[in-house]
Image 1 (tube, helix red, strand yellow):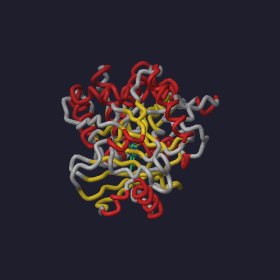
Image 2: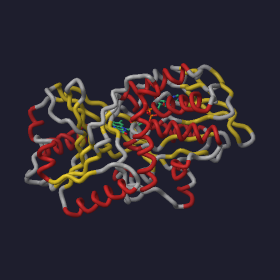
Image 3: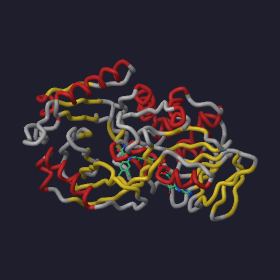
Image 4: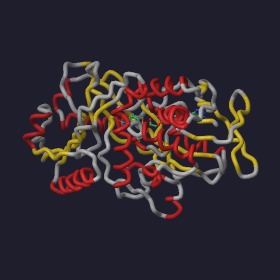
Length: 383
Ligand SMILES: Cc1cc2nc3c(=O)[nH]c(=O)nc-3n(C[C@H](O)[C@H](O)[C@H](O)COP(=O)(O)OP(=O)(O)OC[C@H]3O[C@@H](n4cnc5c(N)ncnc54)[C@H](O)[C@@H]3O)c2cc1C
């Protein structure tokens, strides 16, 4: 079989197929070098503090896999469970977060409510009384945190390769071969490769690749930026998110503050980003943490996101027999890499969905049983 895309999900799927199911006649085809897509461009946050019960279960499976990943791969992925802290600024938001925390605890995930004093002690830098949106408290997931992104790509690649998978770099897929209503292989820049099963794990290029097989997906491609500041001494020991704007920040082991915001808001395949969003992120940053105004931004970059129409991912068979889709990861596919790989491999090996990923089938867009994580309908800019 062929997996298109040497990002986190493609490499993890290959690893679990070979190492857990004994299916090693697998090639991962990557158009560039592995790990230079979104898996190496994200802000490395992992957590399972979702709202939809099925998503909590899925992302908590991923968090449990992160907790054992370094042992499983024998690779240092710098898994750091420093906690993720979401701040809230209104009573309505407090209610929403309390409901979410209670649901998470009922489903076996961890969540705590913090009052203003506890937030102040945890992150003294936060301007709790800022004039625009004073902070009322926080919602902490202690098991959340960060993982070193390139190490994830390289750890899964090494594990897959050791289990017999072929990883072929600089091998762009240019077409999907099919006959009699089923997939028969892929056309690449180096020629045709026959395969019984083809799995698309190309993140922001999902609609593009699916169109080669005649399929139209409920996915739009958008651009998401990230930023890193100059290195400073330890300042923030948690992943912090702002509740009155889209801004999140953590500190890397090198000392840089890694932060980001929302998508640029229109369809885009460039890996750069635009100035208006950079300004919006900077404004949110200094509203919450005025001390950051004195830091210099060292680097900025962008990645292409496969935004689904309900804000939840897709792990599914398709109308073309033998063609499997792993995509629609929106903002949040890094944290999902272990669970995404494990459940996509399960789907391919058993021909039926993994119980914790059954809600992520493509058919939900036909039946209307969508998994609308934010409850705001088919508007990627609002997810
Ligand atoms: C700035 C930014 C911040 C983010 N922050 C977070 C975060 O903090 N936490 C979180 O959970 N998620 C985050 N994400 C989202 C996360 O990075 C993605 O959802 C996830 O990495 C996507 O899955 P992937 O790793 O398989 O994708 P990718 O690494 O993009 O892999 C897809 C691969 O497919 C290849 N490809 C495309 N077309 C072809 C073709 N025709 N032939 C062969 N290969 C092809 C690409 O080259 C690429 O390497 C962030 C993303 C960005 C951009």
